[in-house]
Image 1 (cartoon, rainbow, N blue to C red):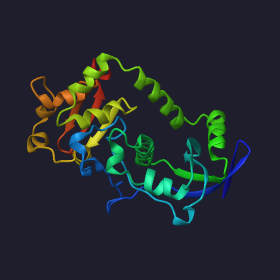
Image 2: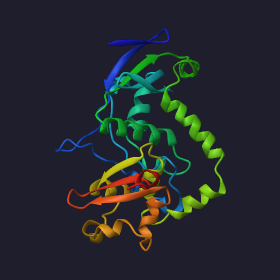
Image 3: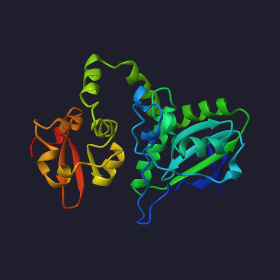
Length: 258
C-alpha cells in the first residue's frame, strides 16, 4: 500500500501498535529512574512522559529517506533518517533514560508521548517511508508544504523556550519536589481535563503513592498539604475518585463556578 504526498510516493511501513499488558492497556514506560546520573542532571520539558514502547520490522534497517507519521489518516510528523529502522526502533520506539534529561534527544521523547496519547485515545497510527538520498531537502520541502502539527509544535516550543520569563522559572521551582513529575505531566498536556489512574500516577512518579492518598480525599487538596502545590502551581485542581482509584485534574478556570 502506497500514498502520495505532494508528488512523492511513500510506502506503507506498519501500523504503530504500542505494547500492551494482558488486560489490553498500553504498557507505560518511565525510564527516568534508570539513568545513572539522574541526581546530577535535570529532566527536560518532554522527558517526563509517560512513554510507550513499539517497533517496526528489522527489514527497514539501513534505509535512508523521509518518513511520515499519520494519525487517523492525517500527517502529523515528518522526519528524515540515515538509518530509518534504527531511528524508529532505537529512537522513538524505546526511550532511553539518558534522553529524558537535558542534553538528551528531546524529539524522541516528544513524539513517543504524542504516539502514546494518540493510541490511548484509540486513534489509528500509521508510518510511511520514502527512500531518498536527498532526505534533508525533501523533509524541509514536505514540512513547508504539509505543515504537520507535531513539527509546528516543535517550532512553537523552541520560541517559548527562548521567551521564558522569571515568573515561569519561579513556577517551575514551585513543583520541583517529590510530586513534581505530576505537575510537569499536567503542564505540558493540551487538555483542560486530565484523568489519571493511581497506577498511572505511580508510573509517572516512579514510586507508589502513600496509603493516605488512596484513603483520604483530603490528601489531594488543601493549602496545608505540600504535595498539592505540584498541580495547583500549574493551574490544576484535583478531584479524586477513591473507589475507582483515579484522579481527575481540571484547570482551575474550569472549576470557578462549581
